[in-house]
Each structure stands twice: as C-alpha cells, then as structure tokens.
Image (cartoon, rainbow, N blue to C red; front, side):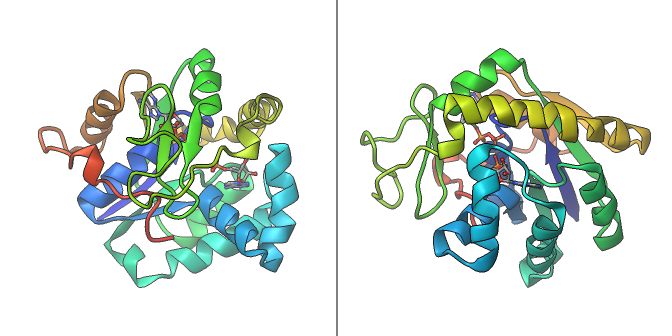
Length: 227
Ligand code: ADP
Ligand code: AMP
C-alpha cells in the first residue's frame, strides 16, 4: 500500500502529479489546500476561519488543518493508500502525522524558484472539479473553460504576485525544515520537478519503485478527486 507525502514549494507540480498518480494507482489524493478552499467556498466555520490566512498566503493554524486531515484520512477510500499533497507543512504537523498513520515515502519536488512564479501566475483551475490548467503549458481546449465540466476557470487570489512572494517565504521558513526531518528518517526521495509533466511523472514513478509501468494518459486523469 502506498502512503505518500508530496513535499515541495507552491507551484512545483505536486497537485498535478498527485492527481495523475492517484487515478492510476487508485489512491486517495488529499490536498489540504483544496479541502480548505472547498470549506471556504461552502462558508463553513472552518472555511471562514481558514480563508483570511489563505488569501494572505500564510499557513492556516495547525489545529484547523489537522482536524480536516484526520477526518479525511478516516474515509474508507484511504484504506487503499493515499497521497498527501501540501501536508505536512510544519514540524508540529509532521510530528502529529506520525501519531496518525505511518508514512513510508516522502517525495521532495526540487525546482528552481524562478520557474515557480511563472507557473503560479499562469495557473487557472476549475471551481467545480479542481482540475488544474496552465495557460502556457496545459491550456484548456476552449479558452477559459474546464475541459471536463465546461465551468468558467478561476485564478486563485493567492496566485497573485504579492501572495506568491509571501508563500515562497513561508515555504522556506516553515516547510523546508521538513526536508531535513524526513532525510534523517531515511524516507526522503528527491526528484527533479523541472521539465514537462510526463518526464516528472516518470521520475516520480521511478522514485516510488514503479519504473517501467506506464501512467494513464493525462486527459483521463482525475482532478483533485475524492475531496
Ligand atoms: P502545486 O500543487 O505544487 O502548487 P500544481 O500542480 O498546481 O503545483 O502546478 C502549478 C502550475 O504549474 C499549474 O498551472 C500546472 O498546470 C503547472 N505545471 C505542473 N507541472 C508542470 C510541469 N512539469 N511543467 C510545466 N507546468 C507544470
Ligand atoms: P496549496 O493548495 O497547497 O497551495 O495551499 C493553499 C493554502 O492553503 C496555503 O497557502 C495555506 O494557506 C493553506 N494550507 C494548505 N495546506 C496547509 C497546511 N498543511 N498547513 C497550513 N496551511 C495549509
């Protein structure tokens, strides 16, 4: 069973790869960012609390994120394995995760910072199904519309340049120390996350010991499904 953590800066391609791999291996893809955005859209108590941190590009307090993560890991679909995308992001979150479930493999998405800003400012996504597009590298078939749902695509407020700068700093200050944490536990597998989606996907499959097996075509990949 695969219990994977995808670690890396915003825009490194974690969500894109997680959606494809989860579909191909039948894993639950848990993106805490997507779960929090859904809660904010529903205007639930948690969503309203989280929203102001997210808009500013800051991390949502650990206890709020842990609550939503635990309830989702308890879902039956998680029993077949899961990918945590965007969690943990702080040392207390990583320590809390140790108490919830064992994690064998942590993939570190390594990419020059100069590529991140470009990827994020060009990112658009479907509010209905979560599918992520990129105006430069993965445009929708019809401009501005989701290929699957036909819904109008949205650009995240936290993908505006000022919030992106804050998020990169937050990543360096609060999340990057996890690289050392998992390295010391012998669970860290760095991959080169530059290059196109297919090459990164191949490196990812190699890193988790699936070299040689083919991925599903990306058109058939699910979005941040199952949230
Ligand atoms: P993350 O989940 O790490 O924040 P995403 O998967 O949302 O990153 O990717 C950020 C943006 O970059 C999206 O617009 C996505 O379509 C695009 N993208 C993802 N992987 C690649 C890649 N290998 N090459 C070019 N663009 C990519
Ligand atoms: P992401 O979709 O992973 O880029 O996350 C978007 C935003 O959601 C982040 O900038 C944080 O505000 C919040 N968020 C997502 N995951 C976490 C987490 N594990 N801990 C704290 N905040 C989070």
